[in-house]
Structures are given as structure tokens and as C-alpha cells.
Image (cartoon, rainbow, N blue to C red):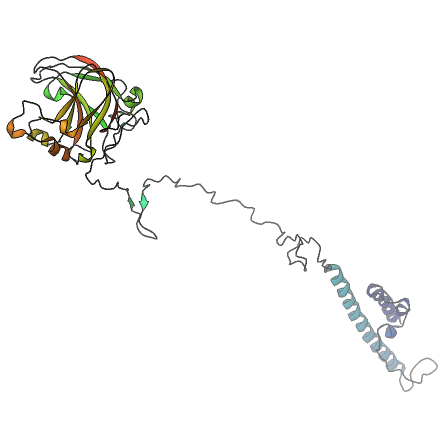
Length: 371
């Protein structure tokens, strides 16, 4: 009977956990757990002992029934405890909750759910911090002619081939301080200077600006910028030269003195200049100069104390009087194989010093363009 009262106490606790009514909690063990039926003898003796059983048999039967009821109550209690635990562990998911948990939120598309809120076990130390061992200096900046996994071959763009036709354009440093005359050949037209040093002369040409820059030690660009053209002082000293002393300046129509072209279409040339002495304009013919005994066709720019503009047609160019008959060349022929234009300042007498003086050249171009 003590077991039975204990079971009834357990039943009351279980009902408290599962929400039984007050009436259900006071029922007998059999009433508290539904339709469990016991076989009860219809007749008992005055001591409550079932008829036909000894006292020991009745006690054994009662103990068995009590144990069966106890087992049922314990199983029910375990189920109730499991249900209560599940209710505590499984929260109700609010579909609108801003849940910070590793699960897909209910159905709210606007929920600011953190899908991976847990502790970051990899704190983010970059084991490859990104130092660029190849900082990107391109030592071959040319055009990449290959794609894919082929060898990267870089090519240097080349200028269009020159067709050999000379087309002078006006060189006017007051507008463009370029040290290059446009000849039709993109690599030609750069100004240079020369003296009679190769003939053992001692003549000098001193420019009105510093020759050379960071790109080219012979560049005349600083002179053009300083003078607004070309300007300088000359001093004609014969030295050991048996011919007339001289200095000069000019430009090649091509990149070198081995390229010639046809300047016929220009009809002639024009200049704007000043000079304390005469200046000759010679048609340079490269290696053919030797063939004609250096008797190159020329015209003379007379001394001018103020700026002067002159035009010279190709037909006005002629060889000097002393030329040998076997070395003659017509100016029209020379113009078709023109290599350079040279401005030459020379003395009057072979083997004697000449004058000292100064000059400026501020324009050069095809005939008629300097005005």
C-alpha cells in the first residue's frame, strides 16, 4: 500500500507537469492513466482477501498488480519529462524574428537573419599578405602580337615608308619652336651644323643657345627656343686649310645623308633672315658631291641688317664658275636627287682668313610660303 500511495504522489507530480485537472490529479492510479483495467474478484472475505486464494497468493497478486502499475506510471513520467524538456529546448520560431542562429529563417524575406553567426574559427590572418614581387614595370612596352600561351613577342611600330617625294612645309619657329623642317619624311629635317675642321681649317660657329638636350647631345631645339629660329656668330679662320674658310648649317631631307628625294614639286624655296655677310644655299647631293667635285648648285642670300624675305626658284640654282666641264649637273637634275639643304658662310679667298659676323634664320619653306 505504501507503494501505491507513492505512485499516487508520482501521478500528482506528472499531472502537474502535463497539465492535468484537479480531479484527475486525485484519482486512483488506475483512474489517472485511463482505461487500464484490473481483474477484481467480485467476492472478498471479511479481511479483504479474495475467495479461493490463500493469504500468500492474494499478497503476491497484489504485489504484481502494484508493480505493473508502477511500471506504467514510471513510463508515463519519463514520457512527460521528455515532453517538458522538448518544450523547453525547442523554441517557437517567429518568422519575423531577427534570429541569429544557423538555420534558415521561417518565411520573412525581410528578416535580417545572420546565417552564420557563430564564432569565426579562422580569424582572418592573411597568410599571403599580397606583396607584389612583380611590381609591373613593363620592359617591353610594344604591341603584343601573340595571344594565349604563346611567347610574348613585342614589335616596335614602324613609320610608313617614304615614297621619295620631298614636300617642304613652312618652318616658322615663331609659331612652332620645333627644330625640324617638314620634308615629307618623318625622320628627316633636323637641323645640324658643320665647320671646316675636316679640311684643317680653324673657323668657328657659336650658337645663340646651348646645343643638346637630355635626349640628344646634338639637338638644336634649345637654340631654336632661345633664338626664335637659328642665330649665331661666326669667325672664318683659314688655319691650315688651303681653300676658303667656311662654316655652315643645314638639314637632310631623310634620316641620313644617304637618302635622296625629288623636290621638284616645291618649285623652289623661301627664307626669312638677317646676316652681316653673304650666305649661300647649296643643294646637297650626298655621295654625289664628290662626283661633281663639290661644285654644288647654289644661290646667294646677300647680307641684310634687318629681316629680309627672299624666294628662289630651282632654276636659279647654279654651279660655281670654276666647275670642270665633266662635273656639271643641271639644277633640275640635282633637285630630283636632293639629299640636303645647306646654308654656307665662306671667305672670299683661298688660304686666307675671312670675316667674322652674325646671322639669324627665322623662316624656311617652299617658294612663296614665307610671306
